[in-house]
Image (cartoon, rainbow over all chains, first blue to last red):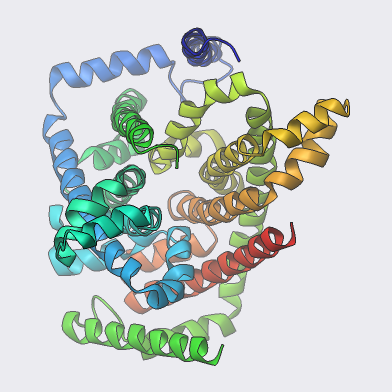
Length: 257
Length: 245
């Protein structure tokens, strides 16, 4: 086994080299015309377009709209999902029955219900937030149940010896003990909520990044489209990277489980 | 066993009751009643048009699944066996898995045009990463003694992968395929929603455009039932392998 420090820096270096190579390759393919401009603009131009968008501020309202909706949806999905997951964990019989339904949930694009939500809430942020939360919540439920499974019995018993009530036992003892898995749930809930909201914006919305992307696509405005796509992807990857780092740290603290 | 059957009956009744309550509360413009939806679903299953769409979706899904599984397995096995490559790729795979691939639909459309290629591509980019990640972790978690034995026996890397690592990691890999199959179906349907002129996703999109509530619910119901059966089947295989080994 090589020295872990050296190994780590070597891995990081190789990873950066790999990502850079992919970028350079794409750039070359675009510049040489192997990939034509109608399909894809060179990555360097995407970055320039992204800077233009951020500097001009012409999409600030849309970006804020999508960010706000996504945050609301994620918060709803995480909070409600956690308590539903805890409830399901307490009822093993119901859990066994619902299991096939929960694991099949993500095979079907739930956002097809978005038009129905528009009837209830109108075209606006509420329908988007609800569809985002609906898409994210099941990931949170499933991971909460998995996380509570892994809570060591000794931790649970200690809480009971201290005579904590059911709610305090859940929030003060089991939630922190299940934390690494809950963060995995949060990670997935974020990813799915974003899918739900962006899909909703593609289908019908008054503003938002998804709406602008669809609009730019319809108008062959590739610069704007790729700039916005890049913005969206970078934002999601950043959030995901932070959550992954947190997850790793929690796993270390609670031992390899 | 009898108690379990009773439980399922009870669950189905509870879901139907909840559905009916939602229908009464929100009205027929939002949620059609369970009776009307199931009747519509039965009508669809008896019609020719449905099966034309179902066949289009089915062939795209099957093709996407084959590509996602073979690609994911190859990538995952390699990354699991070669520690350095695995360490390098791990976070990259993680972020590729988590990016909302629906945002890539304009790119896929521009690359593949409207049609089966775009649907398949959408299915593959959804399914291939979870399968690769599960396979990689499965291979990495194989007890080191197996690998050492393979080395002692002087097996080539290819033989090691095929005869030692693959069987040992199989239950986890099947779990990955189960997750990947669900996401491949999701991807294929998303592809059909946004980038196609046939298939069940296209039928859904058309129903959404004309706000045919009963059609949307009936189609979703059929798709969900199919996904649940697929998932249950793969889970059965997974359990059998786990107990067999």
